Length: 341
Image (tube, rainbow, N blue to C red):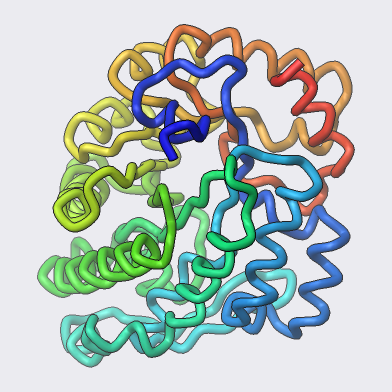
């Protein structure tokens, strides 16, 4: 297990060339994914079908031999397991029933009951551990509590997640109760993924940058710290990667105060500054996903710049956000050639 390139990097080793995987590497840019999605029916049907979810997780590994496979699921399965109504509108994204008061938080399901909904996800993990190549690391994941809460309060994604921020000011006790419930559920969810075979877990805080400064420690850092501490106690040796997208100057504080073993960087972070964080941890990232659409010399040049910028320490090459449906599958081959030579 220690020989896997991504586990080496997360243990603090410099690996040359750096290991690579891409956020949303199983997705709509791949024709084989689109065919499987059509076979499954809806997006949620695909998430809850272990055989098909494992298949789409494996598709980019077969095509590109990435160093890691990330479980195919969605960050909003946890609120659904807690009792929220969830559906996906084609071309628009998720829609959830809202939770906007302490009374509505109290009506959510107890954390002990979430496995009844999430059991198919754990089965997907077990299938993947059996079918992945031995050199490929299996990454489990969940949404970080703040980001999940923004969807539960707003019922959908918004440009600045204002509904959640409004609830912080209007009903801080109710919002704290919601964060606590999500934190407990997320911890249980990730532990179950680890027990099923996940070797690394990642917390996606996609809306961390929307938090007002005074609230960053309370809602972006503290819940992740609780999760990391619980995982470390129950599953020592399983690294956690944190991704507080848009955190800006708070990246360093997030790293120091959460205890994550890996720090994923968004596209705004220059390697010159990111290398300072790299002196304290393994960094992951951070190519602009738009380059996977454009391709050409711009893609090759920027990929090599990132590799060179992070050559001095542990680095996992990735994008600064998820690959888009418009990406050209052939550009991924060009990217891997630039990274691996």
